[in-house]
Image 1 (tube, rainbow, N blue to C red):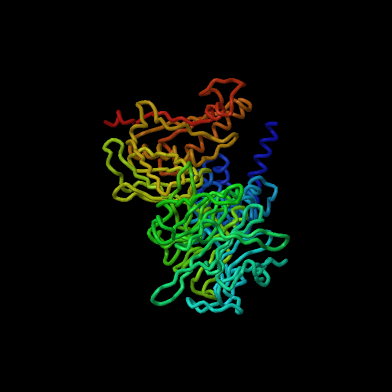
Image 2: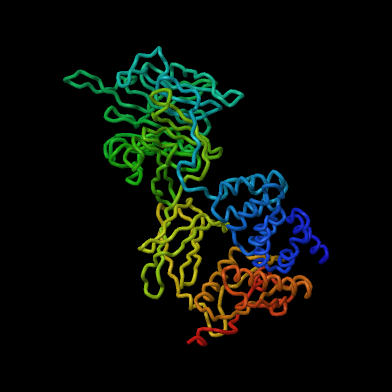
Amino acid sequence: MKNLKTLLFISLMSGLCLTAQNKDTKKADKEFARFEYVDAAESYKKLIDKGDGSPYVYGQLAECYYNIFNTVEAEKWYAKALESEDNPEMIYKYSEMLKANGKYDESNKQMEKFASMRPADNRATAFRKNPNYLPKILEQGKKFNVQDAGFNSAQSDFGGIVNDGKLFITSARNDNRKTYGWNEEPFLDIYTLTKNSDGAYGNATLMNDKINTKYHEGLVSFTPDGKTMYFSRESYFEKDFQKDSLSKVRYSQLYLFKATKLGNDWDTVESLAINSENYSVKNPSVSADGSTLYFSSNMPGGYGNFDIYKAAINEDGTLGEPENLGQKVNTEGQEMFPYISSNNTLYFSSNGHLGLGGMDVFYTKVVDGKMAPVRNVGIPINSNGDDFAFTINEETEEGFVSSNREGGKGSDDVYAFKKLQPLCDVLITATVLDDTTREPLSGASVSLYDADGNKIVSKTTNEEGVAEFIVECEQDTELEVVMEDFESKKVPVKGTSEEELAVQISLDPIEKIMTPEEIVLNPIYFDFDRSNITAQAAFELDKLVQIMNKYPELVINATSHTDSRGSDSYNQRLSQRRAKSTQQYVISKGIDASRISAEGKGESEPKVNCGSNCSDEEHQQNRRSEFKIVGGGPNEQQ
């Protein structure tokens, strides 16, 4: 079994070597074989400088930098090697380095190439399930792909909700109607469209005269069983209106109605009891469970012109008392076009919340019994025009939004969209302090990592010690803070739906990790049967480098240990490789090789003496590196 593992390791390494070694690479190859990656890298670079570069040399150089976690140089030389080779494993590592350097789009391209070459690989299948697993640049404009829906007319068209395979919109395209003085377009009617086999929608069909009248009809919504339709209509139909005594002009309200599906058509239209000749109710939206009707109204008692309300739908179909959604949603302006999605996210349009101009689409939801902060959906859903009547299928992440933005076919047009990224985000404000003086630390490097340990972005704190990040709601992240003369720190940040989250990070002086005998780092753990330096290991080793730079006479002995799995001789060799990798990483950061020695201890000195009954966690604790001061400590330098 040991020989099989060794053969597998040799096979993997050979697979990365691309072409055969030659006499010119002998010195570099020997250094590489001894895990002396810093020296090997220099030797391979000399070959390249002499004009003896080749895919093999570029690949080996990349492997050197990969093993000492120099991601920038590793990325550079993997790219060079892959100009003339298509090695799947190298492509995967190249993707990793791109990802580590924050180049997420390029990383995803390489992962797509890897997945096409190794479709059965677990890494490939995981990527294919969620190709956007790495956060992209946090621009709201990239969260949606918005396109003309393809069925707009030269008149006003808006809305867009699917029921029983049909799309329902509201349109002024009916030239047989009288024109409406507001915009000299025909009165609005409700239409249905059916999707063709090519995915495009066919011609719009006018609904029957039980639904459409010579007056305006508006947006529609359906109960979960699809048998009841709510829609708005002018109150003229009910002969309800107010007449100005001077101008003799009649003013209608907007009322809500419901209709029942009979066979393939709609009938039995009823006016809802919440209608009043003193105010309008419009823009219905039924919750996914059919228990609540959301709508917009300018009824007395609101906060502005039109507010968003909800009312319970009773078992007999009647409505409960309207309930204003409160000041988190409603403003002194207008809040209209509510849409409650299947995951209970409430989308609506407003000109009262901060937006891009005109009406923008916003969203919120109830989290832990309270309304989450209202957020702007962002561009390209929103524009500097009016953007409204947003609907979305949360499962397919497709939907419709209406807008009078420039470039449309009519005065209002319907746009189809596809959500590309999660919508909700949180502003994290990280403040870095000196733990001793409690003063802010300017110039600290703060890096944001996702839950899988991928670096998203790095920023430098300002004069107030602050760095800000925007992340997706409810997603756990981690902040890594690095500052000269201070101990680096990683702080987990629990996911939230709050709009802003303040995180305070206090750093200790770097000397705190020193004792007279050793440098006390968090253990340098290795993956099972591996010796390359990981991101977590690099973070801890950078603290050692920082100490050694501050105390130039300091000499360190690094010892590496394995767990008890495997033979004594194999573990001894593995621990020696790990010690060598640790040493090489420190040397790669500019520390003279004479100042750090490396020694493999195998399994001879376990941290947890659990014998043959170790848990995975105990095995990991035994796979470690430790650091003893053997000369030049602070006490000796005084």
